[in-house]
Image (cartoon, rainbow, N blue to C red; front, side, top):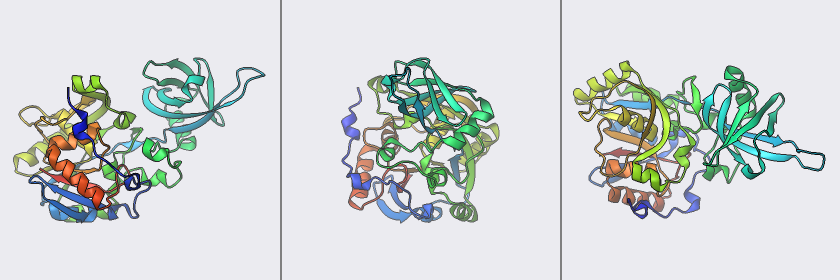
Amino acid sequence: MTDLSVFDFELPEANIALRPVEPQDAARMLVVHGDGRLEDATVRDLPRYLDPGDVMVFNDTRVIPAALKGVRAARDELGNDIPVDANLVERVDQRTWRALARPGKRLKIGDQITFGEDFAAQVIDKLESGETVLRFEQSGANLDSALDRFGAMPLPPYIARRRAADANDRNTYQTSFASDDAQSVAAPTAGLHFTPRLLGEIDAAGIVREQVRLHVGLGTFAPLKDEQIEAGKLHEEWRRVTPEVAARLNAARQGGRRCVAVGTTALRTLESAARPDEVIEAVTGPTDIFLMPGYKFRATDALVTNFHLPKSSLFMLVCALMDTDIMQAAYAHAVREDYRFYSYGDACLLLP
């Protein structure tokens, strides 16, 4: 059994970023080298650490306004209406979603929750995992439109506990290059640093950009379970690498260029598509890949990422890429130097 205490660290609450810096490409960036050297830089310094022809791989998924506030009406004359918070977790079909609903114990199968004018859902199941299954009155594009009207951005729990999502989050918790395919219930947060200005500077430096897609689930923030560690598998998330992107990435790496994942979701997409001989294949469908120390990376030569939670699968991932002692030292440096942590925080450039 993996000892999770190895991946623990102390983080003062003051280091947790509740909002991004403005502009978002002004964030700091800690450069971590494979020999343990650390450099303090900024995100806009990124092009000088890469070479012309290197390929940056972005996750272009779009975040749904998946946080809903509603009311469960009183069940009888003597009862009370109950306020309900629901975070959509995973789409089941065109009108049905799994959700984290609070207060879950006060919801029963058959209850109706009203989220807005002509926008309601019925509780059709309650799962052993604690999730509630909601069937909406709308479906497909009409449901997406209602979510856009009444929903808020699904900020991570460590932010949502301290402030509510607002209109600014509609822009700051969405990447500037997001596609029209809105399926994620959390942002690929490393991509939030990449403003149109920074993307233009990357292009001008001769660095190539490619896009893959992974629809991020709330499992990203869930505590690790023993059975996940034992099985070496995480929650499933849908991802895609097109044949054209796979071919260009393989050609670049065969030509000696680096493949630089922007974010752990892009990295997990690449590694889940790579064969043992390091050839990246076109893939479409779910992955539950879990990357921990001891894993040999097949498709990723460097990573741009934010700072991650202690004892999380994502901190284990960066330890797998760089070495646990190196990452513990890097995070200790970041805490001392007042780097901003987590989704709206500063960045790391990891160069194995």
